[in-house]
Length: 528
Image 1 (tube, rainbow, N blue to C red):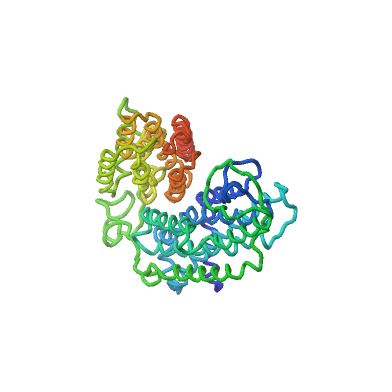
Image 2: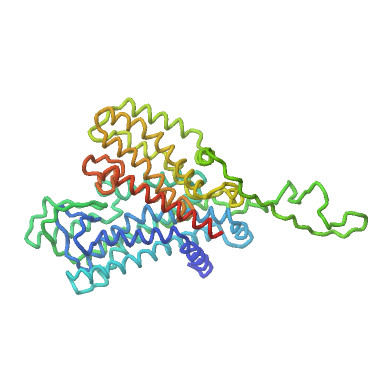
């Protein structure tokens, strides 16, 4: 990478690491590292080996945390990696770059390098966490730095390079820049990252070589490895009956894995630069006039103090900015009016959304409930995801602070925004909940309604924290996948029956998230 491209990548990385979304994903990465290799007696795990777990050697801790980081960052990291080109376009940086000799390929290469720096910084923090876990656990006091870091270099980093390349590619495709791109990537993630464990596809997580090595270690310890099964994903299980001693991937086993890593890295570079075929480097953008076709400011009359007579010198003038004063409080109807307004903003541009909601309701009315849940319910809760990702922020809406100042209370605005997100949720869960209630499943019906409160509250908090849709678009698909995978602690819809959290507990979490979002909004309003 030349000095100019390195400077571009480093500057872009420094700008993005200041964003709240980066901190949120980084904290999630570190938390997942602690779940992958828990220090205490946690039931949660990311890497499953039937009813066994490995001793905390450097190789084992490095491998399980690297796998957890690969699964988490390939989805959540994609959400914060993409969108950089769009920000350059909206902020006007793109028009500045259009005046420089920077080429299209150079610009996209810089963005790709910035994404790699983004992921690399998180992997360094995760590797430090893995080292700390090994030392605290005390299973093995010998630190093998090579075996600790090899899984990051051979597995996680090449996969995240592919994610970085896809993020650049999605940014150059107009149809995939927004929320649709997040849904498309979720489908790609399910098939390419998680689905690859079933065999038959590219082994992006290196599971074949890892599992073969662990089977050899188990057999060497005197156990039969025939019935041992492996998996990657967040689960909770108490059936730990024994341990095995596995030193991890060594230099001798890294040769074949390194060839695949190099191939995947080359594919990642190709994906990042593929967008140069249609990306125009902002050359088509021109100056945006402030008003009118010519950009001149027009007024109906002269401003005070400006000469208009013969021989008067041309003078610039400044109009005092208009300011809206808060409207007087009205008795009744204020929250309802704000709710209607927030709901109109939420569904703006989504003309077919209600048609899809009606189709889902008709399907739910036709299909009978299956056990403690309704088969349509989980998929119905995916339909409003693009609406929910608009909550808690005004992305692309310009400066609306003065306009919103006309609303008598920021608390009412926040409450109206929350209720506007609950309305689509109730629209998609109402019929499945009614069918469950009619089938004698009141707990399942209450669970569906509690989930309809939880997800809008989560969306509002994510939008309020980061000021954008990316965090929710990355976090909710993982939560949804854990729910349909019957991870009981994260089953916010109650599809796993009695093993799921009580509806009252889900509603209490929803209330806590909503209060957090409203409090954050009130603090920001008071600090203006």
